[in-house]
Each structure stands twice: as C-alpha cells, then as structure tokens.
Length: 65
Image (tube, rainbow, N blue to C red; front, side, top):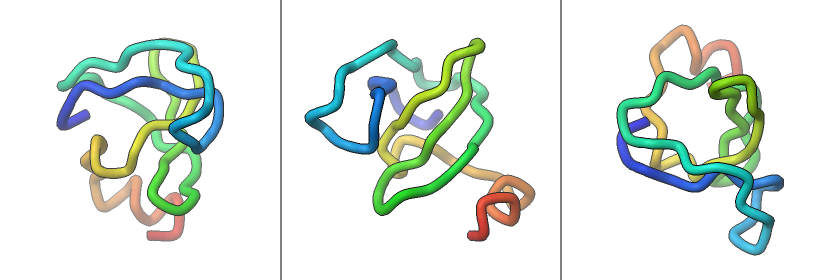
C-alpha cells in the first residue's frame, strides 16, 4: 500500500468499511474492477482504491494488467 486506505465490502465508496489498511502493508491483489482492486490482507478480503496500491509486474500479470 502506498497510502492508508479503508478496506470496503464492495467496490464503492458507499460500501461498508470493514478495516483500515495502513501505508506500507503488503497485500495480495485478487481482482480489479474499474478504479478498485480487491485485496487480501491479514486474512481479510475487500476492496480499496486502485491509486492506493502499488503492484509488481507479477501481480499485474495475475490480474490481467
């Protein structure tokens, strides 16, 4: 994570916040939808804004980027 963000239940700012994800956290990217990415962090899955995540080349290939 390149900035703090809120982990949300769905890819929407209106979705419930399920956790806070701090800057520097290592996350697994699971999917992409519009300007959102679904991640797994500390055993939880949810959605964060794409601009909050820096992906490696491997992660981008895994989600079709």
